Length: 413
Ligand SMILES: [Zn+2]
Image (cartoon, rainbow, N blue to C red; front, side):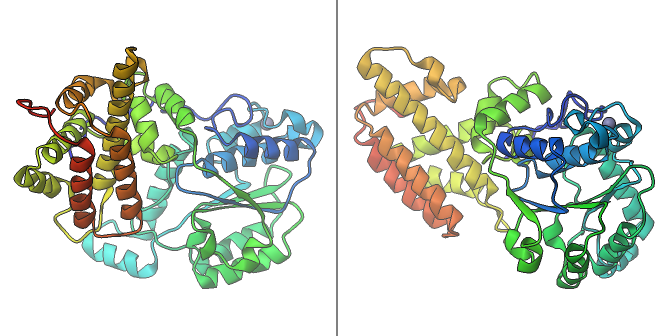
């Protein structure tokens, strides 16, 4: 499926985070208000564990929380932290505060050696530079993922460094904050080393751990942290954020937010898609099902499935998601026709409305609700790793059944 050549534009690019506490965090109201209270009452845990899917805002919350902990106001009038104007806040906003320590996975020695032989610049300095670049981007967009190429683990050497830094007095603020991105990528040795600091954390130290896979962390680590679980974002919150970041996004915003699975990362990636091509593909697929045309179907399956063994079924996921939205529109139009009302405003894919109308003209007795459910079943099966070609074949049969008999002398959609 085609991607636009346009780079990911952001109206926020180049600015560090300003404004009230958590004002740049998307959704996650319950967690934000809980942490705001903890800051206001200076009632804090030494270690926090934030878990949730990628792109739901764990890092964004952690970095703003860290700023509040470092802010000068935190000591005197904590309810006003972060003030965004004191030297601590200004340095923390650039992620350059000497008491804000950030740990992220880095490539292990084997990967580094391999890259050194492959590329001239596969050295440690190369990765230090890459990490600095990533953190620079992270400072202007807290949703930017800090994941270096081939960085699979957080190793014991990184945790030893962290323990050493934690044993020192703060340089500039009253406390030290350690933020660990992808803490679930600590290998077992690193986790065991990390346990030591969790068992007896220095008085002026706070540890903020982000993790996608909670189960990858030792139970002894989890039980020593205050654990906050981040839920997927609501589609309306993602849509609003997309409109702020890309004011010219238009009709794609509601569609992308529906398909993003509650992740802002996923939504931003989807903004790079060629939506017109995807919508055409979906409509053509449905037409091939309706016309029971095995040759057309085979051609469409070929487009959807990866031709290598990558198991990358994102194309199928996206197509089924879009197909489901299209069929929901068909259902809405059908209801509107029967009630003699105009419900165009409720359509998700308004740009292919005429195709949905044509489909209904050709298949007046289509059971569109049944078709929507068939797509949902296919999506569930895909999540459970059934063979995609079998899922698509079964779905095509179900859809042709749901559409019912074709009105004579009409070609569908
Ligand atoms: Zn401040």
